[in-house]
Each structure stands twice: as C-alpha cells, then as structure tokens.
Image (tube, rainbow, N blue to C red; front, side):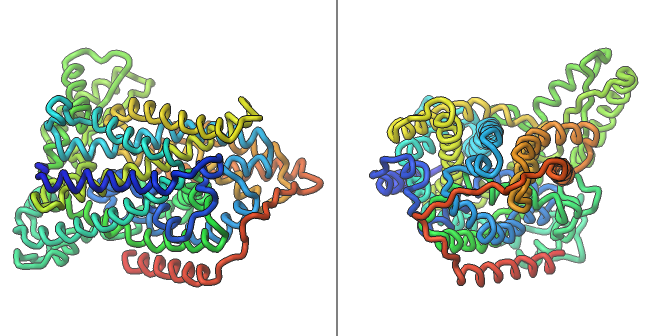
Length: 622
C-alpha cells in the first residue's frame, strides 16, 4: 500500500479526533467510579457502539476472515449470530443482578455470592488471560495487518515497519487515552471507531464483490479448484452469482461432527459457553454495561449491540471468503515467504531442512502437512511424510511434537483485500487504515481499562492497600495500563508461529482454560441459592486442569466440545458438593439504591425481534 498525502492526512486526522474526543469527554474524571465506570452515566447508544467497538478488532478482521477464507467459511459466523441471542439473555438475566449489587468488577460478584477467595481466584485467572493472551493477541493481529500492508516500508526514514514496531505503535496509541481518561474516554472513542469500522467494512464488501464480478472465472478457480469451472459459470456472471457458485461448500452454518473447530455439536452446546462467558462475564465487555445510567439504558444498549452483531458476518466473514477466491495465489506465496517476524511456513521449513538428513533424536519432531499444503506441494508432502515415518519408528512410545505446514496464510485475507482493492489518492486507504487501527485501539483500550480495573479493585485495594484513596486507586489503574501494554507488546511478535493455529483459534483455545469454569460457577450460583462457598473455589480451580487433561487425552476433539465437557463436569462436581453440604440459609446479596432498576419494555420487544432474525439466518444458511 502506498499512502498519498490525502490518505496520510485523513488517517492522522481521524486518530487525532478519536483521542481528542475521548480525552475531552473524560476531562472531569476524579474518582475511581469516574475512571473505571464512567461515573455510571453511559447512555444506551454509547453502550451499544462501545460494546461492538470493544469486541470487533483485528481478531475478527484478521482471524475470523482468515478462518472464513479457510475451510470454515460462513460457519465461523456462529460466533457473531449466536452472540445476538446471548446478548438478549445477558440484558434481561445477568445485567439486572449485576447492577442491583452495585459491583465494579465481575469477580467482585463472586465474593458476595460465594467467598472472598472465589473473587481473588477469578481475578487472578482473568488477569493472566488478559495480559498473556487477549491483549497480546489483539496487538499482534493489528501489527500483522499493518505489516502486510506496509511490508518493507520505513517510517520517518529510520523506523522499519514490521510486526515489532507496529506492535509498539498500536500499544502506545491505545494506552494514551486509556491512561488519561478511563472508561468514558474509551466509550466516546468507541463511538467514532465503531462507526468507522462498520462503514469501512461495508466499503470492502462492495469492492470485493465488484472485483469478483470483473475477474475471469479461470483466474478465480485456479487456486481453489485447479481450473475447474463450477456449474457452467461464465465470465459475464455478476459478483454475487460468482460468489454463491464458487463457495457453495462454504455457505453452511452446520459442519460435520468430525470438524476440528466448529462441529455441529458445538452449536448445540460448546459455542454457547464462550458466548455467555464473553458477553456476560468478561470484564472488558461488561464494564460498559456496569457503567450505564440505569437498567433500562443498559438493556437498550445491549439489544442495540445485538442488532449490530447480526451485521458483522456480512462485513468480515463474506470478505474473507471472497479474498480466497481472488487472492489464493498470494496467500500461498505468503505462507512461504515469511514476514519480518516468523510467519507461514518459513520457520517450520527451516527446521525441517536441518532435521531431514540427520538421524532422529529427542526431542522428536514430525511435520504435519495440512490439506492445502498437500494439494499445493504433493512432492514436498511425500518427502516430509517419509521423514515423519522414520521419526515415528525411532520415537517408539514417545509422542513426537508436531510442527504444522500450511498451504495458504489465510490470516492475510483482509489485508490483501485492502492492499489490492482500495484505490489510492482519494483518501479511502487512509480511512480504511484508520478504521482498522481504530478497531484495534478500541479493543485494546477496553482490555487495558478492564485489566487495570480488576487489578486495582480486586487485588490492590483488597490485599495491598485497603484504605487507598480515590486518587491513589486511579493512579494505580493508570500505572497498570502502562505495564500491561509493555508486556503485551513484548509477547505480541511471538504469536506468529503457525503452531498456534491462527490468532482466532489461539484466543479461543486458551480462554477454554478458564471460561467454562467461570460460567459454571456463575450459572450454578444464580440458580442454586444454597450452594456453599467452597463450590465457587472448587469450580474455578477444577476447570484449568480438567480442560488441560481432556486436551491431552483427546487432542483431536474440537476445543468447543472440550469446553462443553469441562463445563458440565464442573457443574456436576459443584452439584455433588451442594448435595453433601448445602447452605442452611441462602447468602444475601448487597443492594444499591442509586441506579434505577426498572426494566425496559421496548428493549424486550426489540430483543425478541433480534432473536427471530438470528433464527431466520440459520434457517437460510443451514
């Protein structure tokens, strides 16, 4: 991508506007409630846009569009469409209880329902996942997009643009307004960035479908079907016709039971677990709703977000599928050329070349040739598989580690669309870059703000300085943001290794170590009033080893199914403990009187409509 003067001007103006508006709207923040919860004064439209902007990042633009370009196709949209139903449930089941108790953080609720230890355990687990997984992953996914677009360029004449430098640029920009303004700054910045995100996505969809219609069929099918033209498709067909004809196998929501990521069983059970955890119990999402003016405003904002979620697959998933039709050759090239850091097959092939002529020794390593790699490189696949057989024979009972070899770097899908389709010299490239970077900054800012909230309120104030002043709490929160950005930027470049299976899978897989247990503890606590305090502790501590053991014993089981298995096992153990030693009297929860807790009737009607539309979409694309 070559940015013109007008592109650079629009990009800089947008970023400056976002930061300025955020800081201007939050300039009067003085107390911890002001800084961490925006003074509990957010309106529904701010909440709705902020939820989407905090949620949608390059995790989706890179990871989800990459999975759509791969074999999953439209099935990956279940994360979005099922979220619409989840959000409606959160608005009318979870939110009333959270606002009624007056909590700052989700772990705080566990202290009132179970025990102080439960709160601390969840706070610690959440901190580890935020800092080590989600913050680093969001920074990396933004950095890989910048690196793809500007690979080989130099900033200011001496700063090379690569994953490392892009990670630090993204981290520093997001930290600026989080440190200064807290949640209100994030919410107002999200309003601008969320709007740009949706507009930018719509532009990409339009250009991608138009390019599809203008491209000869033989060029579209060369990488995908070895030149085979499906169903007598002609060059004169429109973009939408070509899209549906070329991708018939990818336009289904239901995949076989044996699918490695989203089998149909995950739609029944497994996918609901990360959805309810994410939208109902994930601090950086729920913090927006905890800062609402009233219950009605919070419910309207959440339902508004549910409608926006129904649009997301059309601006992220479909472009990912089209990108593979248009640029599968570029994806194959990127799988083997590498980026400034380790990407694609570069590192793996170098390792293979070093080992292939040497006698197999511990630690034993085999190289897994995935489907697309086998199709593109049959001779190399045969050579690698012969090596694998020698290693397996030498290893005997020892389980060798696996290094994947991929045919296409699918995570480059969205960046290829932007780099190749967005015209230069008219400001669109600058706007798109600003929208994508804004999406990264929104999600990253939300995570930084929430991670600092959990550390400050659940750990620092609870154990380190119980009598901390309001000013001290805000200062600690700001220092946390800086520390977490540094850690995330240091981890980010390491995530390019293909062994993680793509950034979207990396995030979801690692969250499985905590999300089923946390959801089980909350659900059980809400339903079973006499569950004793020990059940909260056991449920939280049981899930990580259980999930890890299942992953080790059944490595081919889809991680969503592992989540479901862990969730129900935790529930079963909590049920047994409660049967043996139930509470004689149910614990009473605190009740705040500052927020209006009257539910919204209009939100209920609109919520029902959102659910109906979701069901209709599943019927259409079943």
